[in-house]
Image (cartoon, rainbow, N blue to C red; front, side, top):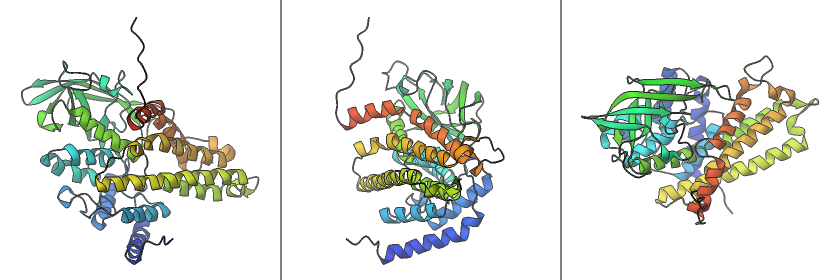
Length: 397
């Protein structure tokens, strides 16, 4: 069996590798909360060469190339080998941009996609509420009409990066008399609008940082009706497009994390020998490698379906469940490989990689719950994917 990509793709690999080698020393180490101009310059450079937003049409700020599965695989492989981020896996690029491509107006696409891809605009997601988490359709934040505007009142919680975001894509109830899943609208909302109050939440991962959570209060917040994405009252359909891309985005860069884990195990010693020399730890790493490769090729399968316009079916439903647990298990091995240093936190003297793996462990554990708990995901897979009967509701007393 010939597994070679062929001359054209190997030439493309060389091109990518040369780009990474040339620009790796000057890349920004942090994107979502780093220096704005450095972020914009780095992402714009990647778009210019086609390594980010590669298939997004040029008129919306992308590179405009035709989809090619092997090119995508090669770019991911080469950037991961060098430990360099390809693009920015944030809520705007990974979740909102594909939603706008599917449901947004032409004006919304031209206005928001390019700046979002270049990192000029950071977004947060206004979905969960204190009484509407996994049961998102129970949301109560309301928007009432006033001329050409909606006036929003309510509260959102677990709103990642709301303390730094310039924009929010938010779900609000615009038709209160409609059914539970109807009457919801999907709106683009500037975060500097009068009446918005953001309160950071401290969490087990430290709370303040790249993935900080917040609660957001809306008091008579005015937003133009023109900011509705799709049709008014049909936001549940638009929201599910975003949720699908959110789940798929969790499949991103597991291979890069595995390489980082392997490098850590080569450096860290246990009893005077590298952790990689331990047959127990090495066996755990190999099992994780098998799972990472499985998820990588599963992602290729889903990309192939998308390119063909085919439904992802069950394949798309299992990503969040599997990958959140995989990320947590990789962090657990990293912490074990560091021995007693694995419990250090908050940038103490002997901390490794500025606490990356400790923070990643807590974040991964949170993601097993966030965005729909693992238990909810199993129900979705069973009912929507496998066609099993829904769990019977208890009788009302």
